Amino acid sequence: MQTRLFFFITFFFSVLGLSLGAHAKDWPAPIKTLEAHGVEVIGSFDAPGGLTGYAAVHQHQPISLYLTADGMHVIVGPMFDNKGTDLSEEPLDRLVSKPLTEKTWKQLESSTWIADGSKKAPPEFVNDFETPGCINLVCNRLIFC
Image 1: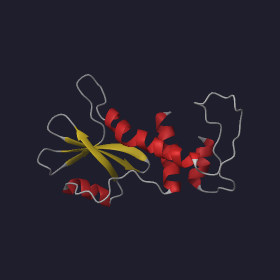
Image 2 (image 1 turned 90 degrees about the vertical axis):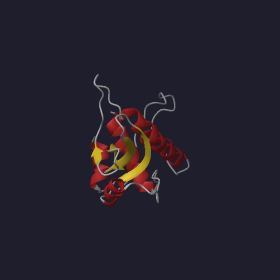
Image 3 (image 1 turned 120 degrees about the horizontal axis):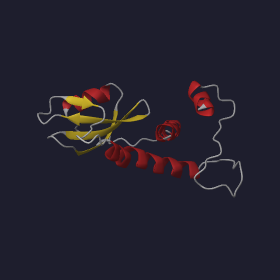
Image 4 (image 1 turned 45 degrees about the vertical axis):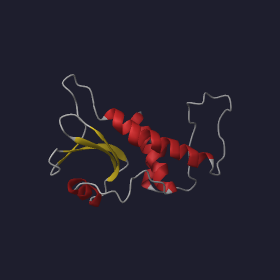
């Protein structure tokens, strides 16, 4: 559910032309290389084992990057501790998902829209978002998810 919600929010972000990225940062070379391949780096965070963590987005998905202490290599993907706890989840949520969601909702609140559904419906339920006449594959995926 969280992945679907994130896809939905990032879709609207891309449609609205919004970005979270920390553009023009002087990232280390391995991080810049990933940016050149379409990864949008949002920010950095402390990581265990002498690594530096980076929160990023690629193809509408949050991803974690870990730069080695020597600054020469980057590891892409979640990091788990010896108990199986995903150490990437909290930084990605804090640096990517929550700010993205907040900005998207602010933008949607100020846009032109038509309310559909009961005004008495619980606020945590979204009834529908539609784009009339949309033939785009992404729109169709959102409708049929």
